[in-house]
Amino acid sequence: MLCDDCKKKPASIFYKDVSGNQIKEVHLCEDCARKRGLLLDKKLSPLEILQKLLKNYTYEDEKVICPVCFLSLAEFKKFGRFGCGNCLLTFEPYIKTMIKEVQTSEKHIGKKAKPGGRRAIEVFRLKEELRRALEKEAYEEAARIRDELKTLGVENV
Amino acid sequence: MFENIKWLISPELANECEEMEIVVSSRIRVARNVDGIPFEIKMKQQDAEKLVQIVKSALEMNFKGRYLNLQNIKPLEKESLFESHLISPAIMKKEQPTALFINEKGNIAIMVNEEDHLRIQGLSCGLNLTNIASEVYLFEEALGQELGYAYNENYGFITSCPTNLGTGLRASVLFHLPGLVYTNEIDKVLKSTINLGMNVRGIYGEGSEIKGNLFQISNQHTLGFKEDELIEKINKFARTLIDLEKKARDVIISRARYELEDKIFRSRAILSSARLISSDEVLNLLSAIRLGIGIGLINDIDINTVNEIMLITRPGNIQLFYGEILEEEERDIKRAEYIRNRLISKKS
Image (tube, rainbow over all chains, first blue to last red):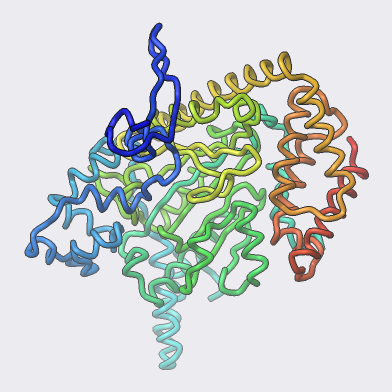
C-alpha cells in the first residue's frame, strides 16, 4: 500500500483519524507522518531550527562583524550563538525574522533588568589593582585601594 | 560515606509536596549573562577565570552556601552532580573554569560558565513551580545588582542562544505517567503538548531518553510572555495532565486490576530480592512501585523512599554512596544490596 500523502513510498504507519463523527483510516510513510508532526523522534535541535530559519545571506552580509566581540554573522549562523551582549544589536536586521519565528514574539514583556551598582565587578577590579600595587610595593596606593574596598563592604584583603 | 553525597537529598526535596505520585519534581531555570564579559563562544581563559571569581564574591556578599570549582572535583563527583540534576552535560565537558553554587537549603543550584554565564536553577519535589520561582528570583535579583546583566529593552535578557532570549526562563516539571503509557494514550498527549508550545524530554533533559515512564515537560518560548504567564501555563497544563493520568489509572484498575496488581507486586518482589540489578531496570521497577503507592496498593513504602532510591542507584551516585570506584557488575551487585536494605529497613 502506498502512502496517502506522497503516493510514492510504501505506507508503514496506519492509524484511525477521528474527526467529528468520521473515522478515517490513514496510511502514511515515515517521512509524511513526520511532516504531519505525528512522530516525536528525530526532532530538529534548536541549532538546526535556527540554521533553517536564517535565510541565505549574501557573501557581503556574512562579513558583518560585532564591534565588541568580533563575531561575524557567518559565525553566528554556524554556531547559532551570540558572542556577547552586543551581538544582538549588530545582527538585529538580519535575525529579526528568525527570532520572531523561533520565539513567536519579538518583544520582551517580562521582568526588566534593574540598574545595579555592579559592586562585585568593582570589587574584582579593585582587588586586581591591589594585587598590582602590592607587587610593586606601592603601599600607600594599596592602603587607598583597601579603603575603597572597605566602603564597598569588603574587609580583610 | 553518605556525607559525600549530602547534596543529593536536600531537606527541601524530601518534603511533603503536592501530587508526588504523578509529579516527581519541579524546576525553574533562569539564564543570565554578565554585561561586559564575552559569552561562551568568544570567551577566553582569563574571562572565564574572572567570571568564576566575580560570581563567587557576588554570592559570598549575599548568600550562604557552597561554591564548588568544578575543575577541582573528581569525575565521579561530577557524574553524581549530573545525576542529581545539579549540573548539565554541557558544563561537564568544558575545559575552562566553571563553578557550581549550592545554597544552604540545597534547593538552589547556580551553574557558572555553562552556555550562559549564569544558570540559576531551583528544584522542588512535586508540583511547586511558583514557590521555587520566587526563591530563584531572590538570587537572580541580588546577583543582578552585583554583576549587571546583559539586557536589551526590546529583547529582554540577552542569552547565548536566541531560543532563551527575553525571560531566559525555563519552567519544567518531571511527570510520572504510567497510566497514560499503559493505556497507549501517551503519544496523543505528548503530541498535543508539543502543539501547545511545550517541549517534552526524558528524565535527564535535552536529548535524554525516556525511561521509567518519566517525562519532562517545559515551556518552549521565553520571549513575549511574563514570567508568571509562562509558569502558569505549565502549571495549568500540569493539572490537566494529572487529571488525565488519574483517569487512565482508573481505566486500568477497572479493566485490568489483576494484571496491574501483578505487575506492581512482582516489581516490588524483584526490587526486594534481586542480587544484580541495572540502574535502568531500577527506574522501570520503581515506576511500578510509585504507581502502587499512588493507587493505594502499597502503603508501607513512601514516595520519598522511592525518590531516594531513584537518585542513589544511578551509576555515579551508587559508587559515591559506597565510596569506591565500581565496575559495572560490582555496581549492579551493590545497587541490589542497597535497595534490599532500603526496602527492609525503612518501612515507614
